Image 1 (cartoon, rainbow, N blue to C red):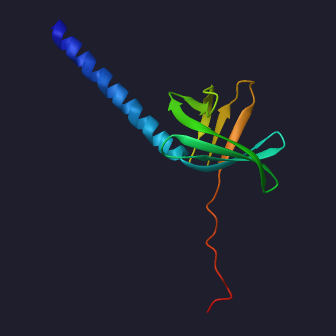
Image 2: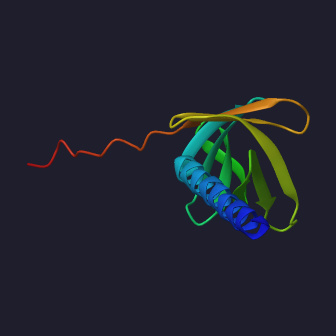
Image 3: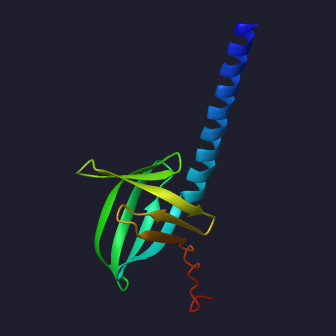
Length: 129
């Protein structure tokens, strides 16, 4: 009886871990893409790649004035950024997540809101016939 109870507990634990992993995979897929946000007075455009890499460009108007890159991952209800060159990991609790936006709690208590950037409209050359 105790062995059956132990086996059942192990099976339920494995199913719970498998379900949590599938949920994280779905959330990671939701996050893949290009997002924009306003940090202080600087616009940022962040691209989260499917392979777990990211690039954030800092913009002054439409002109890039700098960028950072690294890797990203989900860890439970946290978003973890690891920055190239420093190896420093920045962990932010996920406050909300939808197909069009997500928000993170920063270490200083601020909330960063990211909005999905629409893909550019296809270019049509009106001079060609």
